[in-house]
Length: 423
Image (cartoon, rainbow, N blue to C red):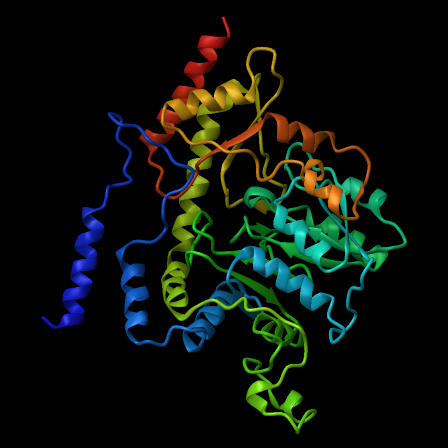
């Protein structure tokens, strides 16, 4: 046995010695997420480290290509997080080198119920976020309220499929066409989800996904932007790495324009360092092969939750999958209909004490967060549904590692809590 084989066996043995994430009724713990990786990914990561080729290179390109082939996206530009993916998209869309670019002061319509990094890149690029309320059933931005939010300054809609549930894309695309608006998609919670058999991320000019630890697959940290626009992808490769042209596919386009500069150090736009690493890409290549199984497990687990909790519909409402869509279930959310008998905090405290992790629904109504006082923004209409979900909503894990026994334990504890509070 050579040293490489010894190392791989040692990693497998160490992994097997780790505390199991299998549910144990004698010591019940149900986390919001369990790792999607195992010894295989750790070995791939380690082997790539041993090559000493660790900064972004051919393995990253292979990962981007495999991901795009998986979901039929034209071009993929990976980066170091889903948050950075949103920043990269908005940075490129506001660049003076981008055709039909967004400009400072332009308004972007987006959901009030979202995560902070949908909004921060908008304001960081000098754009103005316009908050719109969500639909109480799907949790997504209410397409019936979008047109009321449009002003003479509106240039784009930023759609966010919440918790794996696709938006009503026919309505949104119709509004974009009617008002000549750009569509941008933040799909960081919804990898693999479909609307009318078309994957989210395929509808707009550009879209983002996340490979964070708690998402559908992981590269520990990481994200990717996808687009069918080659020039837009090239600009993202430039902005991703300092504004230089080293990683573009058509370098001659730029070196022929600026022949007096060293082609290895030619900077044509401002930029960042948002690169992912080769070991992460090695890990991600294996994760792509597993995602279909992970999604199927999430969907089956959501069905089990619904079946067990349907009898509690007097107390809770649940996310309803958009018509003609396939939900990939980022979590299993529940909304307390009223607090006559108990509050959201009380049931969450009870579940937490019994080893069941809970969390709010993303960031709730982001328009209520104090950070809004620091930048220009606009609120369209009332945000009652987003407020209701923020004040009364929570979610539990629906991830790939949940067993039937774990789900029975969670739903049993929810029923036990209600029986103690409702006489």
